[in-house]
Length: 403
Image (cartoon, rainbow, N blue to C red; front, side):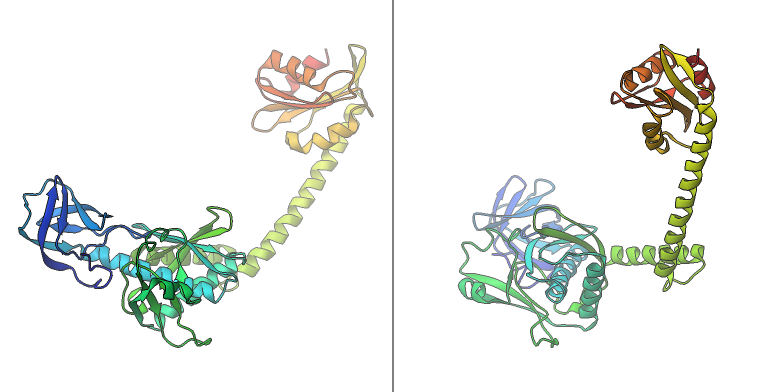
């Protein structure tokens, strides 16, 4: 018999050993929570031996111990549920219901797609037609913490399974509870009550986990991240307890540092970042225009010094202050216009070259010839190619091609 969900505040109890199989012990009754529905198994001791895991098997609650116990069937045994971990799980599990209740007020077509607790965070999977963007995350966190602050009562009761399924307000976790209630005549329904603007409880859900009796016991809830674990699902990860406080401290410190660096306040930081971004985009545009003018001026100089190589006119030269990707479009335009073959080279960490041709000579062939002489690699299409990592100065490459 297990009593953990119904009496979650119990930590110490006496029981009789029903059976022992190696490290696996079944008791006459237990307050240990068996792993289920996304909530991990309780920790603690049975007869002074650490509990490594707790599982339900064929109607029994099996306590898997860290070591072989010196216990036998019929023996009385003292048991201790780890207080810190049980309390954390109660708070974390209740927080998931609080957050789902917030989702009821923010998200459309809401469904419960999964849930899980680990030592550092909790995750809940929503099914919803609403995009959970940054604004939605902030609102979910705000509403969840408001519900905590309002000290809403949390209660649970056994309800006929069919009756619970017919209640439109009851959320069923379609992933982690799958199979948990299939053979049960009754299910536990957990309600977070208190008056709300719409007259409904904050949240009502079918759940076999452990919970606190009032939302004020949850403490701060800090949303950490969101992701998309599968089609139609949005996963929201959050923290309660010490990590929630650490995350808030880190966020506050980062916001203060950023505001200080930007010369503004935290409240005005978003506007200042927007202004700086626009200013940066303007500077980058001006820089791109300046580099284009530089390339054009350099090309005009080189156009007066084209050379004939293998019966074709070649424009070959160095260009400073730009990278290969900033030369792509210009080289494509010049090839076949100012010369049959255009090769511009420079340094961007290492020596590179950009080649454009009219198609009679493959641009990739030119890159292969140069990299065969100076190392490096590259490639491209018949009319355009790039090479990089050359073991030579740009001037050496130009001298080689102008021979």
